[in-house]
Structures are given as C-alpha cells and as structure tokens.
Amino acid sequence: MTTQTDATVAPAASANTGTDAAAPAVPSGRRRRRVGGGFAVVPLLAFVALAFGIPALAMLNGAFTVKDPATGATSYGVANVTASMQGAYLTALIGSVKLSAFSAAIGVVSGLLLAQAVVTSRSRMLREAVLTASGVLANFGGVPLAFAFVATLGNSGFLTRRLDLTDKGWSLYGFSGLTLAYLYFLIPLMVLTITPALEGLRTQWREAARNNGATNAQYWRHVALPVLAPSLLGGFVLLFGSAFAAYATAAAMVGSSIPLVTLQIADALAGNVLVGQENVALALSLDMVLVAGLVMAVYLPLQRRSARWLA
Amino acid sequence: MARLTSRGIGKVRPGRGVVLLCAAVYFLLPLAASVIFTVDIPGQGVNFDVYEQILGAEGFVASLLLSLELAAATIALVLLLMVPAMVALRLGARRLRPVVEIVCSLPLVVPPIAFVAGIATVLTWGPEYLSTTPLFQTFVAVQNPDFPVVLVLAYTVMALPFVYRALDAGLRSIDVPTLVEAARNCGAGWAQALVRAVLPNLRGALLNASFLTLALVLGEFTVAQILKFRPFAVWIVGIGGSQAQMSVAVSVLSLFVTWLLLLAIAAFGGRTPSPTTTEK
Image 1 (cartoon, rainbow over the protein chains, first blue to last red):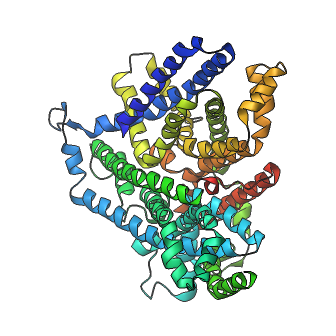
Image 2: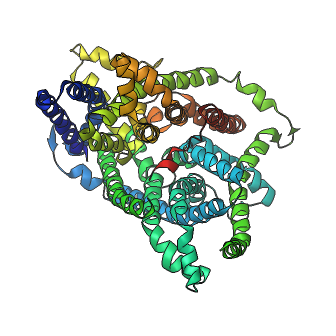
Image 3: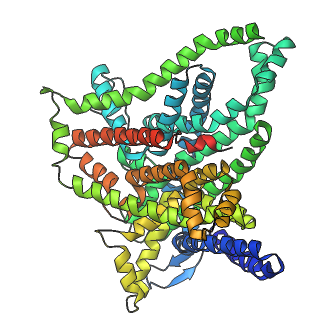
C-alpha cells in the first residue's frame, strides 16, 4: 500500500514531463493550457508524497525493523508482524473485525430502511432534515458522540438512572455499548451512501412488475434488491471500514478496557504496556492498512457496478 | 397508474411511520438525555451553571482557539493545493485525473491511527539521526505546541478525500473550459480567469469543502492525542474524567454549533452541503 504512494507519484511526474515534451507539436493555445495543467497538479502530488508518503514509508520500514533488546542493533525481519498476529494483539484484531462486521450489518439494514422511508416520503422538509443531519453525524462523530452516550447510558447516565439499567446488567462500556454508539454514525453514513441508489430505482420498474402481477414482496425480491445489491454490499464494506478505523469514540468511551486494534496501537505507541513496542504498533498499523486496503479493493468495483445500473 | 402508485404508497405507510419513529427515538434521545444530564444535577435540581462555567473553564479558550487556527490553516492549505489542480484536470491535464483521484483516496486506506503511528515514527528521527543537521530545527518548529504545523499537514492529508469529492461535484456542474476560454478571450490572465471566472461559480463547492474540513479539524482527536497536542477534542476528553457535566455540555454545544454552521452555509451557498449524496 505504501510503496504504491510513491509508485503513483513517480509516473505522474514522468507523464507530466512527457506531456510537456510532446507539447510543441500541437497549436500554441493548447500547448500553454497543457503546461499550465501539469504544473498545477505538481504541488498537490509533491505535498502528498511528503506529508503522506514519508510517514507511510516510515510505517512500512518500522514494521519490518527488529530491534535486539540486548545490543540495540537493528535488522530487518518479520518478528513484529508475527507478534502483531499473536496473543493480545490477535485478540484485538479479531475483536475489531467482529465489532465492525456486527455493527456494519445492523447499520446496513437500518440505514436502508431509514433511507427508503425518507426517499418515498413526500415531505421535502423531512428529506432535507434527515440528509443534512446525516451529513453532520456521519462525518462529525467521535468525541462529542461518546460523551452523549455516556450521559445517556453510562454508569450515571440519564436513562441508566431512570430505568435502573445497571441492576439489569447493562453496561455501556462493552461490546454492545460500543455497537450502539457506532451505529450513531454508521446509520447516517449508510443513509448518505444508499440514497442515490434508492433514488435511481425507476418507478417504471415497479409499475412493470405490478402490471405483470407481482406483489410488493416479489418486486423487492426479484427487481429492487438485485439492482441494489452492489450498493448494499458496497455500503457494508464502507461501514465496516469506518467502524474498523474508529478510535476517538472508543477511546473516549471505554478507555482501553476493550480489545480493539486501534486502542492497542495507541497503547503500544505510548509505551503503556511494554517499553519498546513502538515497532509492533507499526506492524499493527500495517495490518489495519491491509484490511482497509482490502475493503477499498472490494468497495470501488462494486460502486462502479452500481453506478452503471443506476446512472 | 395513479391508482397503482397511491395503493403502493398506502401499503408502505405504516412501516414507514414505525421506521421514522424508531430513528427519531434513537437519534434524538441521546441528545435530549445529554442536555438533561447537564442541567439536572442530582440533589441540586435544574440549573444552567455548567453552561455559564464553560467560558471560564481552564484551557477551554486556548484549546478552542488552537483548533480554529489549525482549521483556518488547513482550509487555506488544502484549497490552495486542490483548487488549481482540480481546475487543471478539467482543462488540459485530463490524463492525470485517475492519478489525482487515487492519490486523494489513499488517506481512506490508511486509518488515522495508522497514519499517526507513521508520523510519530518520522518525528522520532529528528532527535535520533538529525540532531546535528539544520533539518533538526525544522523538526522542532513543526512541533511547536503553540501552533503545531505537523497537525496542519496531517489534517490536510486527511481532508483530501472530502475536498476532492466536494470540488469534483461542484466542477461537474460547470463548463470550466468554456468559462476559462471566455475569460481569456476577454484578455484575462490565467490567475484572473481562475479567480474571477471559475471560483465565483464554485462558491457552493468551496464552502462545502471548507465546512467539511472545519468539522474534521474541530472534531479530530486521534492524531492530536497521540502526538500529545491539546486542541479542542483532546481538551474535552481531558476534562471528562473530573468534570463529566462540563464535558457533556461542551460536546452538546459543539454538535449544535456544527449543525448551525451547516445550515448557515447551506443557506448562504444556496445548496445543501451533503457531498456524499452526490457521489455516484
């Protein structure tokens, strides 16, 4: 993933000079435009190479650098990566994957239902309100969200006190509590992702199915859901990635009492558990990048597929 | 046809009501409960003291100002980098379009926590290897706690995907080559054509991109906390342990302020800033 950064930057630069070199052959107006175009993109690519490429390479380098605790000598090896796949770190990885998959699945279903309710509603105000609110919640969750849930369902939260939830075995600071909090930004994200697809479902398809004697359920099973399938799967993958990468909500809500890979990385970086675990943190980060890369590799083709149907 | 359609809608209606009701309860209850939590203190009854104390709270003004300064710098940098590049992609450098798209999506593949792990590693190189070189001064300067430039760099990278989408949606709706051509024919220079012909047509998209970046920077916690800086979000979590009421009050306020900003920008920009909906 990280080598890709520089790989993409390098051809960009060469493609650029290639355009410039070929330029004199074309009329002068176009030539000037092309040169201007190339130059305008260079600062962006240079910035990304510096501010993103270097940390990414540092992460890759560190993940494969093994430090001998006795001599302090360093060498390349896979010890960190192996360590990141064992013991507490493996538990954390599995915990993160489980939590993300579970909350993403619920998020997809609830988001689809909510989006469908909003899209078919004839009230423009409701539509606008839900979509703007989704924009805020999907992008601006994090810390305020964690505190809102602590105030509602935490140990001394409003609902916990009113309904004596603690006596009934409720605790926000666990798997189910985190799922509940994550859904607060996952459902809006799903609404934003799936709304264009739902709007793309043509009324004619529904009418055609009706005219052929299909019931509402049959229409959904044989027409709407197959058309929506790539968008739904793409939405799941996007939600999974978003939940997998979430750190602020979990850190502000539960500290590090739950095994999640993001919390483990933060702990290892701070040297809270064992000194000298920084490189294992980098190896864990690499694991995360691989999972996130996989997510994007699945998501992008699916999105293209659904765009073809619903364009 | 009209009868069919109305029958269809009539059928879905009860289900829709239940869905909307559940959604309203789930999304509004935590907000309402947070407000009650901050004003209804057990044993003291209802009072609004917490909200009066916020301004005087230790570190509040400093951390909020730091976040706002970081946001302003990030917005300036990201627009300065992205706007010329995106406009150029519409003009001549079409071949570079997939490259820029991939580059701007890369931050999505690297979660913030992994990104900051890399940054933290790079920052340790300063003292370890470069302490005798002039580069060392740069390392010290970017980590100045009064204005950590390193955060601006990190936030700019993190904002790229959002800004790309917002600008792309805006540029899609205008004919950039014709606009620039017209401005050039009227004797405008390149910079003038960009500033006076293209940018005014991009007002909505620019506002949208700026707002998303502002929201991102104000709410950002991961990178700042790991690098041990203390902007707004880190401050909220810091006081959460000792002053639960205060942290919830500030959280609620920040959510509402973001919301108001969004509505204001929507009214001013003339369109709803929900960029993800434009993605296809």
